[in-house]
Image 1 (cartoon, rainbow, N blue to C red):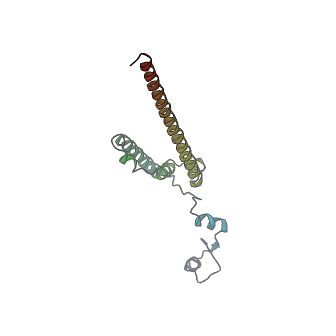
Image 2: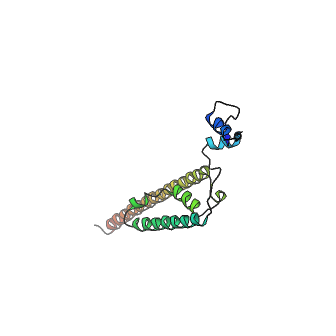
Image 3: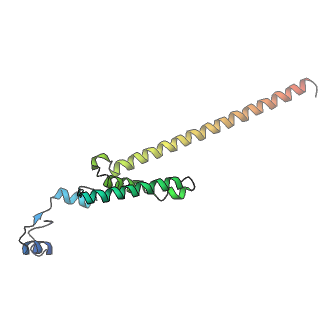
Length: 158
């Protein structure tokens, strides 16, 4: 079993291992660093027939829940607000025994979402500018039409 300091004979884990005739070994610094950063660096998968059946049942239940929530979302957006996209993706990844290499890191997801939000804000700004320009053009056309009508009326002596 790995411990932070296998030479520390006062460590209860080291003592327990020694009592059972097992040797303690140091956890590599790289592993400690990713653990401290909260990075998903390993995944234990049970592949017995019973475990596969249970995973398939849980997957079916999860997909059914998502379908029901999606349909209920047509009634009220509050239903859709219940779903955590990242948590759902992680759950589906686990239930389908998908390799971690398939999914993006949290940092990459954050960058993509920030980029998308900036693009949406820019598109909203462009759309608002276009509406303002159309309103100004309509206002100008209305003013021109009024001045033309006044001029026409004055020409016929009204």
